[in-house]
Image (cartoon, rainbow, N blue to C red):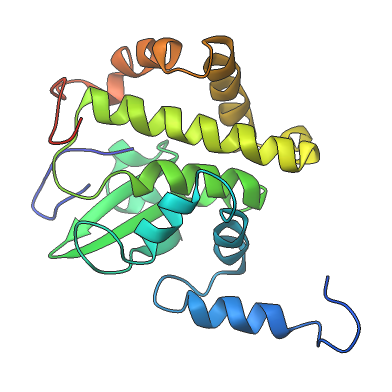
Length: 202
């Protein structure tokens, strides 16, 4: 989720002789400029081979700032009580982009986090719009649909984020993999009150 600019710019097993920790070391090293959190590392790994690969590249630095995005779980109410119930928040300070994921999603499956991170990776500047959010929600739903296909059990895990994503996925697939139904949700979302219809690129 994105909110307008304020004083600071705010912008949701290894085998045989291979050691069991070798893959972890490789991933941690690759993502050290982004995060050291194991759940985020798992989520980033899962993005490969899906439409989320674009988001992964953006998070790792192929974005408007030219810098890797920083990923953190955070109590969003510490930023403002208005953000307490947001699923995630994009924040920009100077050139640095951050993606803050609400603490309540720390136990969500990595597939769900990959989907939410994909949404937030769309937001790369101070400007946002209803059409940008519509695109981001649709992208999130598309990624989750692919994640569920790879691991159907992820959708069975009961938590606030999977409930949100299962709803978005139903809307997305029932609309022929378009954002026509999701757009109605975005345009009626009180959190987006005051956003323009369009922003650069959307």
